[in-house]
Length: 77
Image (tube, rainbow, N blue to C red; front, side, top):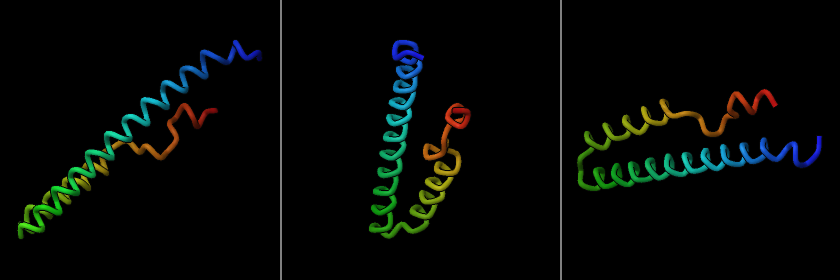
């Protein structure tokens, strides 16, 4: 295989990885924002609300695509 034959695949992989990194960064930002909000609720003495927000964060983590696990396409390689 020549270098020019592998370019489209490499470009597609780079674009896919770039999108995955962007999605992971947004996910991290959402969780960090939620953690700050939970701390604020705890500081205000709203433990019930903070616990509810913790449960919300755990649900989001559980339902999110695992960005650390290889995608099915990567397993085939």
